[in-house]
Amino acid sequence: MARRVDTSSYTTFGQITDRLDQIVTEVKRKDLSLESSLDLFDEAIALGSKAVDFVDTAPVAPEEAVLEPVIQEAKDAEEQ
Image 1 (cartoon, helix red, strand yellow):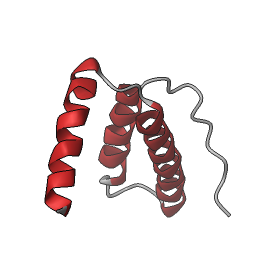
Image 2 (cartoon, one colour; image 1 turned 30 degrees about the vertical axis):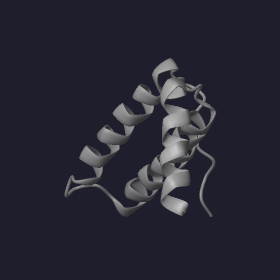
Image 3 (cartoon, helix red, strand yellow; image 1 turned 30 degrees about the horizontal axis):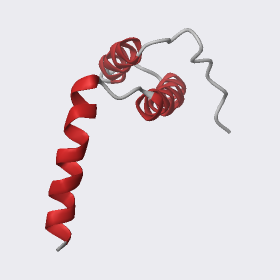
Image 4 (spheres, rainbow, N blue to C red; image 1 turned 45 degrees about the vertical axis):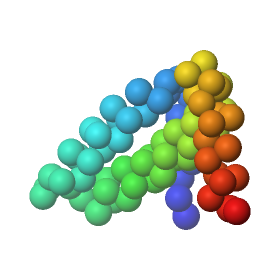
């Protein structure tokens, strides 16, 4: 059973992606044990879930808000 990973210390999307990059580097090591690999896998999954939460709850940037009607209009035109 996967252990619960504490991701509370990661408060930004950038911190998460930096840690995921570190995990990728670590799992490429040939001397890494299976147990350590599985622990890193569990951590990566937890961090990925937290990253998705960040993206889902991120406010829309002003530039995106201006473009939303244009994008919607283009989508509507494609559907016709």
